[in-house]
Length: 157
Length: 181
Image (cartoon, each protein chain N blue to C red):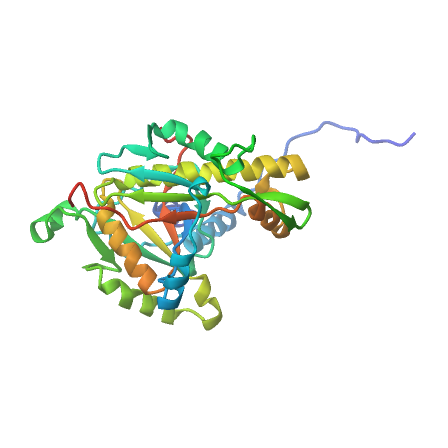
């Protein structure tokens, strides 16, 4: 019979802490790499509505964002409380969308331009009027793939 | 050493936001040129093939001429698209060659959505969500029946085949402006 068990008393050895910094560093690098610091400062209220049938936006580099909502408190003196469009870091008019899409498109590789998606991040309290104008502007700029940004929820009503 | 590392770790832990962007995908129709416009005018779609959804500025629904609660929209849309009992007033079926399925009936139904400029975005997304859900459920049912798998898990060719049987067409008319801006 083969012997499986060694004779003598068994002791649990102390876990070596020498590799602890390595592990921590590894974690740090992971979080450093995965952290995306938001480059645009939101100037409008932006609570997107909930929906059940949402899809994930895969390639973030192909996505350009349009924010629509009421200006935040600190901007209300200047811009009022009517829903406004924000492109990049500033408030914009509907007419600016064309140029915005054109610049965004130029930044992409030729082969990937058809895959460009525009994500509409619209606050849920907005009326459809301004959204419709934006959609028409997008059609004119032939940015036809859009994504109505929404949170995933289990139930909507 | 380890302390500094821990400090950094905690900073990045707090600063990290995994904001996965999710949303409802849609494709806008291109602006038609003049020739296409003329062609479109010639091409009339029969009334029975259109499922009309209207949303007014008070966020109320009018579906096929009847007021409806949002909770019933999904079932109604599903019944319209699939037309299981071949009713006269529901969309026509067109027999077509579809990969994997052979000669099958495909629906000719389309959904027409019109909102007011005063409709709230929240309601609009709810309606879009319900309509998407109706199609998704039909696609899923068919996938289960034919392939025994969820629609999401099928490969692209099979998905395309199912899309061909229940093509998702949501046409949006120019919004009205009754409620004012």
